[in-house]
Image (tube, rainbow, N blue to C red; front, side, top):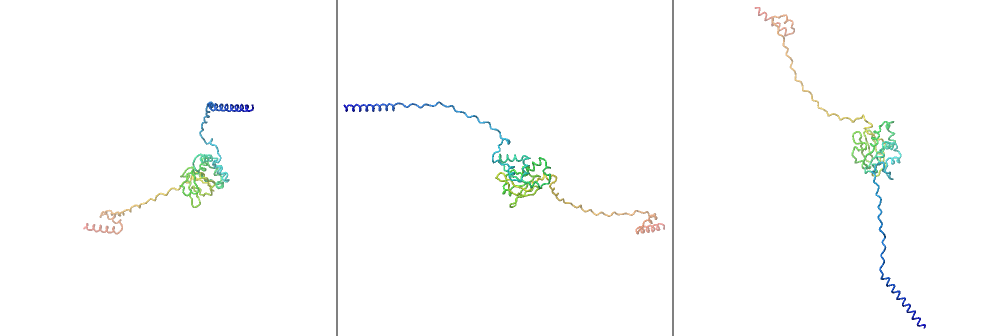
Length: 281
């Protein structure tokens, strides 16, 4: 009886094993289900970029690190009068544009406050607005000049006020000294205030005064006329002395002959008497 039960359990176990194998084979042969595709998503269009605005001086932002000549001179501490003139003539704003939005280099000869105090009292107040603009621009050269380039610059230097004539600015370098002449001012560069290979600011202890403003009546000396060769007049030919002829006197006119004086008249008188005596014979 016990042996029969063991046989039944073996058969039941074997049947379960066959059933498990059949189910595994069926699942392995069934096709895999296709993946579910997501519905297509419509692309999102980016908004069009805003229209670009034309740049202008008023719209240019003042970025950090902007080169500002007025601020550089203010930090230096002894260029208050020159900074005031830069702002009055609006040259400071022009320099900001040139230095930060172009490739132009700039060289500035900045007079100290002591240089302006050396002018006669009332000099700046006597200048017109146009003269003040010219005076400021006369200190600004529209090229970058390093310390070593002063020995090779061509004179007269072109400034923002013009070149040549009565706005001449001449720079010469001898050794370590840089001399500046204008026809009215003669000074030297006293030191370097700022230099970044685009902007150079040099200190001068005198105001650079152009002749056009400070010597309007002083004309350059006229060139001496070429010496002319004066020819002596030819010598005059000697004139012959005129021949004075004695008037003919009639022999019979004894009174006229007697009135004639001198040896010649006596001879004539004697001849006349002799001739009259001969006729009377």
